[in-house]
Length: 344
Ligand code: CP3
Image 1 (cartoon, helix red, strand yellow):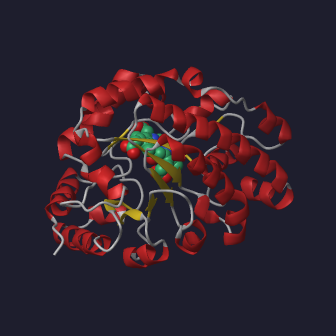
Image 2 (cartoon, protein in one colour):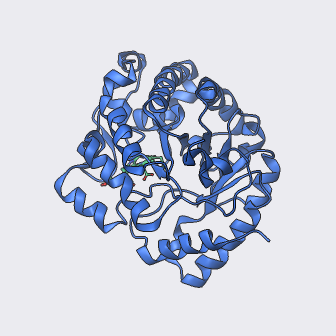
């Protein structure tokens, strides 16, 4: 067996005992890192996602600096949408779609494509990242869930109330369903391509799945998440489902065939472990705790480690992405604390 299969991260996801708790953080390659900002002075965010050498460099940066136990490939959840005919502009801060999807004509105009051909730079970047990481640090591939992608496609960017999406849900649910199914096909193909290219685990980001009534979550979101996860089962890599705001849905998602659930910071980790029993968990420190002082970071991180010790596998993470103003010293404190923790 290669060293990688015995990495703390992959062992924890398989529910095997580990000497210590592995840690990585969502959005670990990003604007809080001066070396990332240096790269961004020379290249736009969109070009960074499409240029394998540069994407590889920023993927490795946080692993080099902090010694995280996993790397996540640098890209964006919106990257695969451009080849479907929905290019996002990131130059004004948040993502913007020139022509949001509002009716069946728009939705039917979205193109399905073979991922290896439509976004060849992603597979190429994964190849470089795997070389750069060697057999010490596993690489996580990822995609956005169809529902979260649909919010960006229909709203045309971020949103406070999701008025367009919800108007569609409450007036033409079959149209929203059609969009989700189409995205589901594309995302399954996209993730399988990443596995073929060499990623060691995959995470599905469902950042906005939590904005629905549980009954709507169950009928609109869960089936397509299940189809993607089931479709990845034979690929053999661990599958992580991160649904932000999942607390009211834990009883619905617990039977998904995945290796691990990401848990956001609004939940007590012990309760989430009870509710989703038998699976590994990943989480769940409030990203804003890293704006606090050293003692709080240590105390709260250790509490989470202790709670995670009761799970069948715990990967330490934040409950959502790390924020741009996070001090480097806070991340150092966090990593040192988690990597220093030992189960009693
Ligand atoms: O985790 C990593 O380090 C890998 C890279 C990664 C990025 N985005 C880089 C990025 C990942 C996994 C994502 C996921 C992502 N992207 C999500 C899901 C997770 C989450 O945080 O909720 C979502 C909703 C997006 C969409 C997105 N991308 C938004 C809303 C924005 C603008 C807001 C913001 O944070 O800037 C982005 C841009 C983005 N994606 C940046 C980075 C580093 C900043 C762009 C820059 O460098 O200027």
